[in-house]
Length: 380
Image (tube, rainbow, N blue to C red; front, side, top):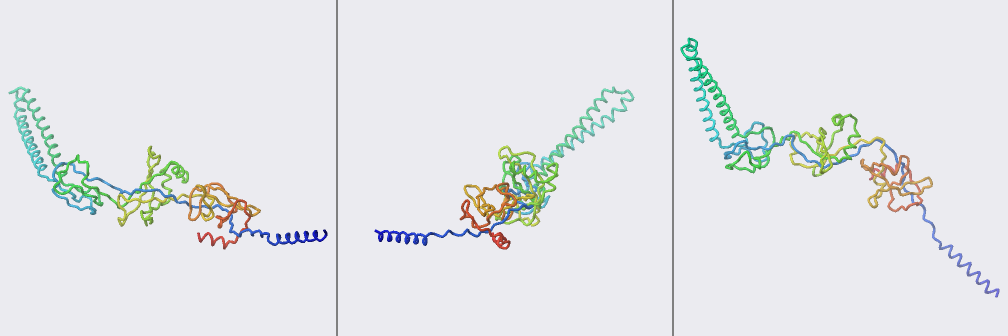
């Protein structure tokens, strides 16, 4: 009986030793870079789709009807102010002018006859040879003849203007658009389609829209009592072209629309850009990059965040080196950093990298080496 008991105790001892030798060793806390959240003055960039137009975009339309005798420009050509673009058949209008001039000459002759009659009757009335009734009648005829001259002059001037309208010239310097009407076409002032469009692109306008929220922020960021005062203090803006390259010339916001669009709930803003090399044309599209200044902003590196279900999180570290997943509210970007509204505050410690494997409440070893932190941030 004693032998059996001894063997049993020996077996229990062996098993106990075996269990202790196979027990898993706890993994050490990971060494992860940690930095303190700070505040600083920064600028965030907001981009808005923009439509580009020339400072003058004018439709060229005929003001008289007739056959298009000549088209003196080509599509895309650059023309100068006053240059002839189209020529409408002028013969009917020249004949109208000739007819009006003939009527004017007839009216002038009638006036001379009326004046002669007045000159003839005036001494006769003074000598009481004839009654003054005849003189009054002659003077009335003279006034009618004078009025007929004025009317004939107006008709002749109108005919001259219409004749001039057969020669269609460029009202400004610029580039010619499409030419839907060809030589020989019948054109009229009531045509729906214009003869062409002419764009002056020495400078161009870039129109973009701000939502009501963006507009409120826009007004609050810059000093000034009125929109005009605020516009004067705005920094230059950048135009991002369709290929995502930045237009080399900066622009200046110079107009804010007087009211919001009831359909879109947005307000239109205009920026003007110089276009010395004519690289921009009416109809171009792009994006306006508008910089907004933020004072004492809380910045968090984008590399230190993780997105889950449309929310952005960081891992904060407490005094016991335990991490907590914290949701943050992002209100903009500045370089490689997020601009934070709430969720963390200045002085909070956050984990910079390796956050995809962290768990809530996990213990870590903070790595606070300035060189290591700088290396991580610059790499991102």
